Length: 343
Image 1 (cartoon, rainbow, N blue to C red):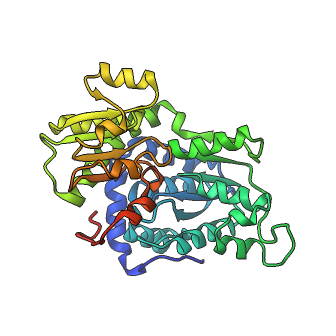
Image 2 (image 1 turned 60 degrees about the vertical axis):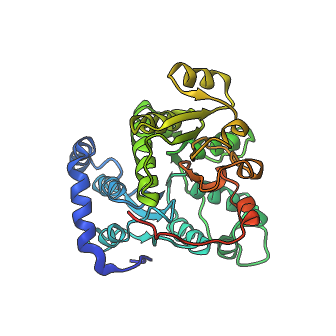
């Protein structure tokens, strides 16, 4: 079995994490028990590009219990739990391709490794796996990362040489990914049916509001150790994730401001008791900024120029494109790492 992880010796700690998470996932546990009897996924090849965490591990084990052959890579290098990846490889013989903090080249190499298993179902978180599959299938070499291009097109021929056409369908979990899928559907290039998991009520009304709401605040506190009470906390976007973040920040006694371009969502935020303004107005007064829109370049150069010294900028969306990091890099006088990533 092929795999690419940080350290197989971390598996024992990963086993403890997986067991701890499983105790708090009773619905999935019952599904796993049913799958063990019915085996509805017998022989099905599944390629997963998800956050490689203890919760995802329990999903993987449920799919395997149903009879599926699963290969897993990371949808976000920063969230990978190396010990969980090690446990999946050692104890459950799951091909995992994920290393916490992996660079862009490794990220796409791992997507290639999953596509190399010729999956019939693609389960995605951000649409990079499905998007890469489509770019290869359509021969759009110029749009592919070098690693994918060299794997899929080893010769000068225009047709991909190293990918089967056996995909039956896909699933996408995030707002960002669903936006990408719908764009592909509108353009008439979506090659197979895809389920927008993010549209499920239990996904956006609970996971997005309460899960993302809490984890975003948790991430900011772990990274900065800043006191939220009394701070001006700017939430960019008042979709389901933005609502959850605003509620959690308000619960920490922050002074919450919402920026929103959709007039109905802006009105909803106002009626929920939040100050609503445009980004240009919020930029000079905010202490902490969090993007949660699924769009691109929500916070740009003109906003950075207006911000206070010491302002904190964070992104809760799946990709970092909501913050114009390139512009920030161009503006910087120097750059320092204050703290290492803390789980």
